[in-house]
Image (cartoon, rainbow, N blue to C red):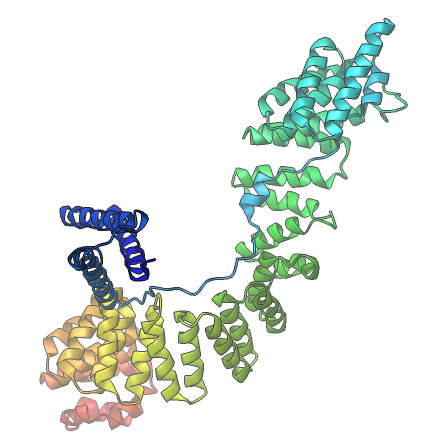
Length: 589
């Protein structure tokens, strides 16, 4: 056995599969050419092995060159191109991902809508037979045998055959409401809703006309009518005739108002029509079924989406979490508890969720959030670390761990985590913002600006990024660059007064008085009682030599906020006004 040749054959075949995949995703003439060479190399080496042919070194070298070396170069080129794309786009992709654990099945509206509930089952064969009035004994015995056969099919869960059997019996006994009901019921079970609706309509007419109200085996006529109406509503629901379905179910409630299953099916129909308020009304009644956790979860989630967090906690508090471990119940209850500031309840919910879904980063995020609100900051940090053990590349957890470390005073570690956050998968804009500001606070201005520049390449026209970049540049006394950054922020949002203060202050420092004047005047139209804007505008006019106007504006400053008097006295930019009579009068006042 030629072991080296087997190894070469294996490598050639694997590279052939890669080239086939590459051709499917990126077809080109070059790829076709290489793929043909690859197929030829693979064919030669495989048949050499199977036919036990001795190969000369030159042939083996040619196979290695064409079957391994050339496609390997293409693989390396693809890898290099992928890494360059990753670097340019600011995202991080791994060639080999950690295997994720199987996700816990989550319940949602689609599951609820697709699984309308049943009520009672078929009427037993003997009960049906006793309701019939057949004088001929031979026919009576034959019908009885057919009914018993149908019952046997139902008991063995052969519903298709049972439905066909009852369809035959319905043809033979068209005046029997019981037979019609069973035929309609079985057609519902096998999903033939249109036929079921037609048969049940006929059954309803028969039940109203011919059923004896006093029947020993079928409690009374109303019970049969109730069952027919229920399954008629059921069939109409699956035919997407929701309004007619609701009407049929409502008639069942008129007969028996205690049936929780009917309320739940009506809620399904309203949900299918996007009438959530009406759905909630009927779900509340359906939730009286103590065993139905699903209804409580659906109802709780709807309360949460409507912002009624108190009712969310109340309804989901009734769900048997320990027995069924419902993810949605814990999730909505925990999030509602956070909004209601019931952090101990939220903490309990998210701890359980972590046990169920240890690889879901949102569980760690919400648990740490509740711990931070309770001022258990060390515990919150441990929660972030635990989450990062399972999902080490999660930007959200890295970002929040960084902000918490900053709160705890460990700025060096905070910067480390924030850098990891922006280098991780799906980095968030807030991480860049926080990191840039933090670097500015520790006087690493150049590094901070680089962070903001990288963020702007990824997130484009972000007001917050341009604004914070301008602040950092202003702090580092790079006023020209700060103006450019503030200008772009101002183009995006002209309604932020704090931006206006900083932007105009920098313009004044570089003596662009006309530009500052224009911004101040535009801003006064929106903020006519802003003392700071009048204060800055007076400085501009003072520098431009318009002393009278500057003093008039200072008068308006004091009218808006008299507390500015001390600030005006200490402002060195107003030294040129000290000899002005109007300014002196203001200072005395």
